Amino acid sequence: MTSDSGAEPPRTRCTVDRTRGGAYQWRLTAQNGRVVAVSAVAHPDLDSCRRAFAGTRSEATALVGTVLHSTEPGGGWVWGARGGDGALRAVSSRAYQRHATCRAAFERFRLLLGELDAHESQETHAVTADPLVR
Image (tube, rainbow, N blue to C red; front, side):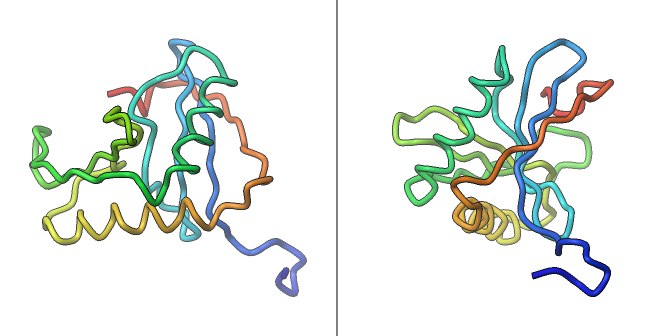
């Protein structure tokens, strides 16, 4: 469905960014434009990054979330999502002031993964900085 202007309504999407260092990381953006999650690790090439996101999406209901207090200045709570093998797949894109809000954000991440169309193409953008590298 499109609006009267002909533009498509906002949608949940995965974007793959190339960092200045040449690595690739995915980020999941909600319909409101806010980045919900980023890949937990940088990938050496675009294909491996896309495969990692597809794998994360395919195991969305089995992901285990862990909420930890952030070590970043200002504190807050951050979440991490682990796959069935125990490997960290995704992390929150920001810190939350309340533990309960952080936990709810992880659950929303899992739901958003399910909203993505399996055949939806992923966008790729080059970035000039390393915004996602932790």
